[in-house]
Image (tube, rainbow, N blue to C red; front, top):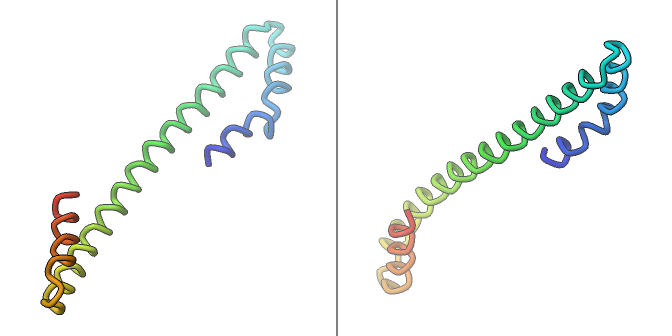
Length: 97
């Protein structure tokens, strides 16, 4: 997504659009303002994508930890002959959350 956002200005030919706005309004500042606004919008969107990616990653990790705890507990109950390894894994996941 970030790669696409980075290419958006060239894909949509913003420089040409900004020039045409400047010509239409007979004011170069209008085109430059439009270009800065579009670039700002893309930067804000890129930041939002990064934030939402982090949130989603955290939610996925939390679900994985819950499942790992559940299966680790089941493993330790089924394999009492291997308490040191299974308990180490269980305590690792317990402390990680």
